[in-house]
Image (tube, rainbow, N blue to C red; front, side, top):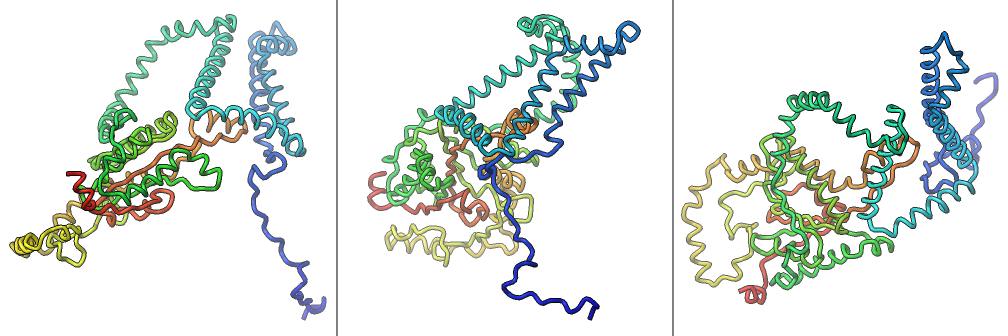
Length: 476
């Protein structure tokens, strides 16, 4: 026992010595004031401008040092480069405004909700495509204005006419530019050209006026078609559903025997909704060189995002989705589903249910035909279908890229949005919601990657069986 006496025992209700409970990190929208900036983020732009102005003063003073003094060089630099001081004053005023918003909730609420919030509400009346084009035009105008200021200082001409000297400057620099481009084309161009040509093809785009298929063209699949129609309703007005707390599905899987109308059903969805229809061929992502499939996936989703903004939604259809492969195969790609060649309609797990529509004499004939050579075709240790599955498939990198693209559509995009706004201390604007409806069709659902079947990627799974008797009669 120590000289200080026995250690007091903390009672059950005594919480004075208990460690404080950890506090969760609040969201930016839940803050009453602006999030505080660090010292470096607060002063980096102002420090850069002041150092640049000091270097300009030093250059003028060292060039004419015997003639003019340091104060004369300062005044000369101030007259010539007054805009640097103006930018520094704007940066200082911006940081003063940020400092007030970090301490005054009323000031922060006024600027975020009344000023910038009101501007966002007014621009939200435009659709996503018009906002995208207008913002791009304004960025180009801003870049041309900065280039005009730089040329005016370089050529000592008025600001309004300096931009017209740019073609002359480019023409004079053409020999140097041609040499640089030639060297780069020799070093990198051959690989880029090879991969670019290999990444073409396999994707067909149909505009709304190119598709004449409608719901009434699908015969004998009334129950499945009814479910698919319910999902298409979400694509017509997704904002109203999400405003009420609903969830808009982004993927549908149609599985069943071949020839039951899965592709026809996807075309009917595109024809009824008036959205572009992008069809991906089964072998589009199967390539000899590793990495070409990843480039195809990137190019595909770049096209899907552009079409989604332009037409307020797009439908992409993956036929024979089992060719995408499975990450559990352990190889470069492909699926490992074993389906022996001796599998017959009388096996415990038949491949179809079509025998119920046949007569008794036909069933007897098929039974006798299946007995001939059934054992001879089954060679132990050699399963051509398994070998074909191992050699096929889209590959690990392609499948992972496809899974990430199906989920990762919330990343801020654009150089100005991600780089320039973050350099100025502003948060990048979130991208618009790309309305992309994925439709997958396969007759081997067990060969699909399990991660693809989870919620958020494929939200609805429908079995497309053989058409009904009335549907067969209508088709005939």
